[in-house]
Length: 118
View 1 (cartoon, rainbow, N blue to C red):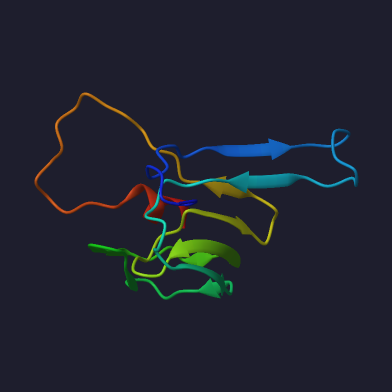
View 2: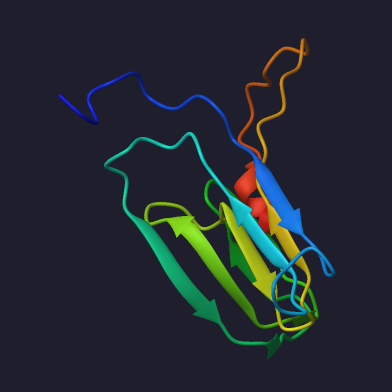
């Protein structure tokens, strides 16, 4: 049956730049190896100015908030704070990529790669 094959196992971004696009625009895209039935949300987060000492709850831990955050459009799994990919109000685009390492995984909670994308 179609769609019943193995789960995807890659996480790749691509970009096409003028003059290789039909319009004078940048095209950015990403595929993800997330579970196929996981809900992906498209969210807009407006720019904001934060007070000294403000904190933000990320997926697994709370960190100090930046003094100013830019507006962003994000594609993210509904259950986490971070994002698979996104673009800010200045046209900067970023996507999460899998990174393979030989370093052991730490025991402490940490920021996810997708938290860093956000």
